[in-house]
Image (cartoon, rainbow, N blue to C red; front, top):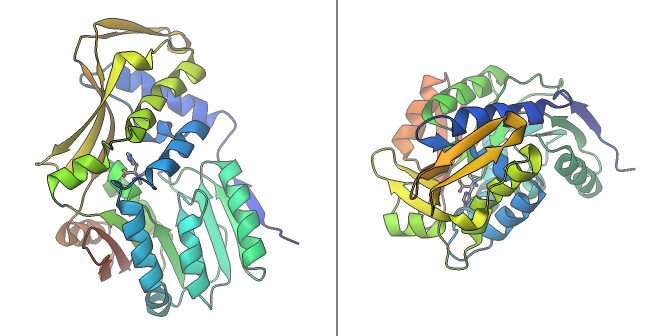
Length: 319
Ligand code: AVJ
């Protein structure tokens, strides 16, 4: 029997309230912003999946190369009996780890999407019948109450998603990861690395226009969830490299002067022609920066692995 436990820590309607608060805050300030987490409705998740298969979008393949080549090294370095994965989604990347972790007893996937968690937990229990799976429906950017599980424990945050947090949010996030760890536990982090500007911009502005559709999809989310009347056709996709911050910014540029209504918030939002709405930052890292950020959160970097082309890194830290 492919059984697993599932714990919900999100109260009913929490997602709706958070979306309303984010949209109200982001669309009434200058410059306008929206947090990237609202990209991922069913359609957005599909489009992101398509992005990971684009020739221009290297991070997924680069991280997979490291996971496949280093899984047994990570297992040996940590001796983990429990794997906790933050933002686990479909748990696709985790499979590369699970196959190498012979001593693993428990897997705790954490995600806001209950449907993704159920699908992943069911499949993993089928492939690893002796593994205890306890799925946690939770927002990992808030402090987590984890189920009891045997140590050493490895907390993993893969995919470079840490780059979607702003520096202050990153500090808070790393501090909350630190709070989950006991002595002997580890933190495995995936980070995309600073590289040639053209390679970076192209990864976020692909020739087939998939990333443009992914970016504009957030407007459809606002239309559906808040009754807004965004016309995605009146916005264009923009990807720029901010040299100073060392992050990619995705924006939506209004092609015309227009007013958009958001009835659920009793809001009318004016856009000037050419005005840009920031929808995502995707920070790129260097080893020194990651070491310093984990240190500031009370952890110590012990391992640093990159793919053969030096585009992406997995790092291991401990307390
Ligand atoms: C969610 C961090 C993997 O920032 O690269 C892909 C999201 N945005 N293309 C990233 C994304 C545009 C992605 N991650």
